[in-house]
Length: 358
Image 1: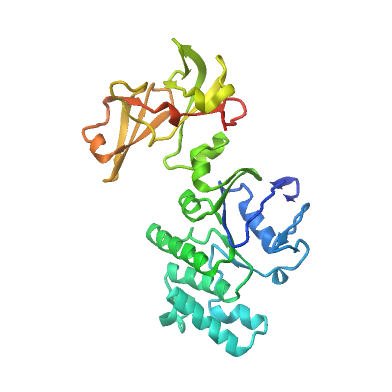
Image 2: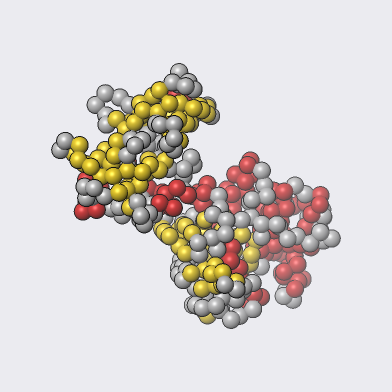
């Protein structure tokens, strides 16, 4: 699928297959083309090249109303002068559905989403979470073949996002309709998706089950985008250290597991070393020593602690996640030594950013 706005190429040969009844999530940074892709599926944008198939039917040139999809927008898009009941019924009334069927579906959806007590209220009398449930209910009432969600939780506070996120997943499991969901929030992406597509600059860099992508990212972009805090990235070169091969840079000497990378390892190759904060730990006897850092900031969250520091003052900040007990006594300004299991190390080609051994 290709789409351009003037000279700006927004979608560059995107090819997606969503299994029937699946929950697919498109994730990527702002401007990567994910919302344009969703709008193209809905028929709100016309693609320049490619084909859009829905349930075996070519819908590429069909108008939005003929595609049998329902879209939930970031801005709710509720009619301010209509009650919740009227908003839920609007799409069905527009299609000329019988009155008895409209009332039945509105009742079913309101019970499903806990809107029974709100049916006679106007949107301005609702909270953000209630408005989003009404927007979802309006889509559900139509019983489309596909649901399209365009960053529906971005206007909600953290607590409501978590609550509505769970509701969306429960609704999908109950309804079994095919769902495509766009977000830039990696927590939503990881927790909601059956299949995840990570987009960057109009292309899909990697797709698959969320955990598989998180554990074995294929590019440096995917590795840094998924994970909070982001994966630590250090410049290095593959060198021999006695009988062992290590990735050595100005900031660290990192052990390498040859069985993980196979023939991709070659002495003298420039690499980017990837270390997830939760894979790093305080160095102990018998463990490979990665580096020593000077602690700058200690962020305690109660059940875990993030320690930020630098191995050299001009170098990048290194973040390590520690359990609360291990982090006790770690203070700003002190030096701590870090270690890692060699099988947890990620390596990327320094020039292309492509992962080694994947």
